[in-house]
Amino acid sequence: MTTEFVKITDPSTPQSISAIDKAAKIIKNGGLVVMPTETVYGLGGNGLDALAAKKIYAAKDRPADNPLILHIEVPEDAEKYCHVSPLYYDLARAFMPGPLTVIMPKKDIVPFSVTAGLETVAVRCPDHKIANALIKAAGVPIAAPSANLSGKPSPTTAEYVMEDMNGRVDMVIDGGESEIGLESTIVMIKNDTLTLLRPGAVTYDALCMVCEKVEIANSVLEMLKENEKPLSPGMKYKHYAPSTPLVLLDGEEENVLDFLTCEIKTKKCAILCYEEESDLLHGAELLPIGKKDDLSAHAHMLFTSLRDADKLGCDIIYAHLPPKTGLGLALYNRMIRAAAHTIKKV
Ligand code: TXA
Ligand code: MG
Image (tube, rainbow, N blue to C red):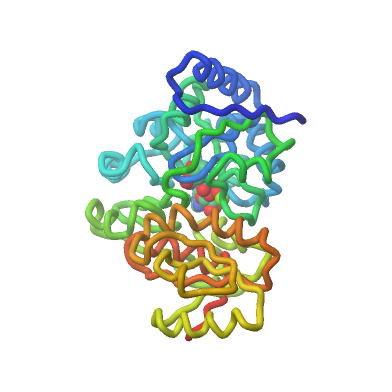
């Protein structure tokens, strides 16, 4: 199929409105449209159409047991698709629209092909003008996984989307760089407890301000044991992985720099480095990810850097092991997967 590529800078112009209407028609007719969101780009289809969901899995080469998120226009729309509890509205007041996905028991209207056979469904209300306009115009919830081929880093620009999805979807809407750069935080509600399944820009500490009991699922920080079933199916796959091996360095900054200086002499290295280090590392391909303490910048740059590093033909990619606090937890979760849990103490 031919993929139509549309760039939208201001969603309120007449051309943009007609492009969004066209995209909405594609969704209503069972087709696929890639849309920008504040986290990463999403590969959208009608979330109430079982066949559209099947097309999404096929376009991504995604295993059929990995469920999709329903993107809704306003938090109250969740009531159409799931059994909501007061805790959901506490979360909605604090974080929606925004980078939070909530999993609750599903209603019959949601096809099992969207939830991969599960009795629960994930909903999210994005904070992005184009995504919101598209959901509204489509008049249906938009099921949208990240718009990458399964296993690859999530796309944060329309150019990366095209690398993976050109010819596989009907339309791609280019809305510029994703602001956050990491996928949404995912929580599951059970009674009065929240389980954090995937950390994102809504941090563990922020969730604790809204709910007294927040548990962190094992799969967030650990490698799953053989035969262990994760609460979130997506957590069992090797994810975000560049083809070049990625190694995370755990140690004092001075030791990391000494180690890298030696490595550069014998290997062709790509290094995801802090801006402050750019002048200290010579002879390697450097991908600066922002200032040392600027975790938002690291989040914004991570997937871009991994995709770009992979194109340099290096023997190895090195990066700092992030802290597990604040937004660092989301970075840690993505990076240990991208590195297939290869952490080197230096
Ligand atoms: O920021 C985001 O969440 C982006 C944008 C496009 O909204 N979407 C995204 O979707 O990251 P995806 O499909 O790449 O990741 C969704 C994750 C998967 O790991 C999946 O297993 C989990 O959500 N998930 C979805 N429904 C679930 C359910 N009912 N129970 C447990 N996990 C679920
Ligand atoms: Mg994904």
